[in-house]
Figure (cartoon, rainbow, N blue to C red):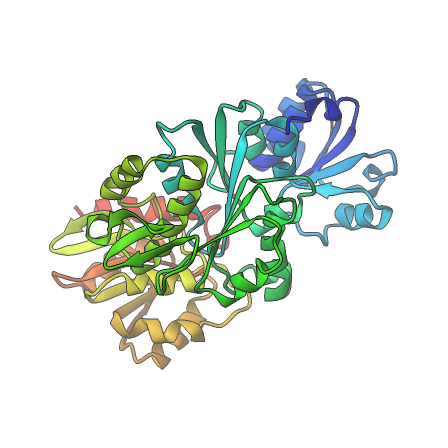
Length: 450
């Protein structure tokens, strides 16, 4: 519900800029809040901070001075990546000052229905599918959130004639209080971001916040095949809509005789779907459920599934060179994502993997490596992945400096009919500012082969 007037004259501290903090600060200022901004980056190298100063905001750069947190603050908006161990955030918690992420602002700024999508893997693909399936329907879809477009910025431009389709991370969901999706989707739960959340249980609690404000008039779309997910949605107040690739589920989406069914209504044949990978079938079922609940037509859903072949950086086909196929799966930032990517191929795979070391081992990856003939690894986790490859019986293991150097080395080992797959199983931040840049570097290196 639109609550823009509630922001007027609020005193708000925005901690951390980047895209989300920058957008939040500008919107708060636009709607009459008194905004103070803090960013660790020095002012000289901070064009966003300089722009906010020109707009009349009080900006503090180069550190996190504790005096910024006092009892006159109504709330804090923090960049999702900033940990709760940050000195300003710890001080705010001690003083009882609410700490939000910019996602919470969306609940102040829009009258549009929201489809919120979260999970350890498949969020981007599912969010993209839902956005496309809702095109031409009763409400105009607007895709935003963790997928790249700041949610509060989009929310400020929407009306009740729109529907926001939002990809949401656990980091973002930790900072909500009133955020209320009409349809909430939980795809799966896997050991991820434990360096931030501490335990899988705490990570799951963060994901489950997506449902906390739902009522009996809302919908909870969830993975019936994931026991952790089932536990998290056990006591939701909204209407449960399960999806399953393994069994028939009442009131949900499932597969019967090679046809996807929604509440016993045939939607599309499995052989008509062009998006590869068994894991994507879960994403497809979830997207169908969410889209149908918002009013998508069967015709539009079928059109999307007959033509949509994937999103950039998620099992993205790049090219074929000398009979070798190249796929960019840079968005695979954890083990489960890489497991599913490797299992999507029957051809021999040359796997490019490695990145930020979050302290985990890779033993869970071993059963999935039977189809991998060569591992080429890079980044902080290279030694761990090389050890894992040896345990999996992979004979061809190579360590290189980065993704760009991995591509020509992969061609040295490749034969016609092989697949070269970038699926790092790790975040990019040890070498690249984002998984997008890592994937772009891979694509560029592949094209240089030609």
